[in-house]
Length: 280
Image (cartoon, rainbow, N blue to C red; front, side):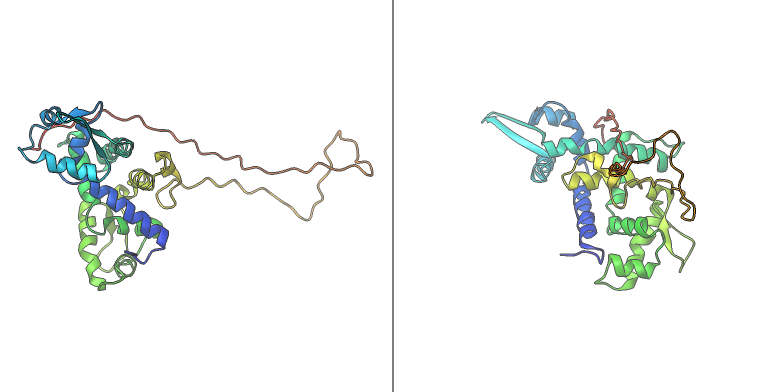
């Protein structure tokens, strides 16, 4: 079922990314995922790594992550059960350092640096605001959009004024800019800088290699356009010097133009992130 008035492929893309964010944003989920980096752990070993969780909190969190397909429970015997990442869960981990990089550039204040884990959690909170993903998608695609137009696109089945609370929140979060009441909305530098994060989440949620983020239709890098070739139709083109004239009956070889532009993707190594303890 469509959630916006955007094209079906875009609507499905936004829905997948929103679902991916919903898997990891709830409190402690990222810390548990990081604690499971490495070899599978028994429940007691994992509990020791996330010791700030109160008794009874870890089990439902693990069940949620297992249901989401990010963590797997392996029962070796009745007394030997371990937990570890699924392939899907492990594939998601490289997104986390990308979030840290974005947060360090756009969110962190020089007088109040945050640990990496808190930067991730704070960033995920901003991205999972209601309608945030759809609004960011539209603004990235169309550059500047009025509030009423955004309402028709993002919330086609509700009143036009319902778009303003999430818009005001995104402005307060620093992801969207406007010149004032009644003026169009556009992405801020921080919002535009989310391209690598949202593009990678889109690739992951669609089951594609993460390096496909570079080719995302909205958040990917634009392809370089070749410079136009000069062409003067009114002038004849002289034959190259030193070549004998063509003889009757000879077939002149045909030249083919090939696409010489390729886009190599650099995969950033996974940064070492610690699960950390609770915030103060």
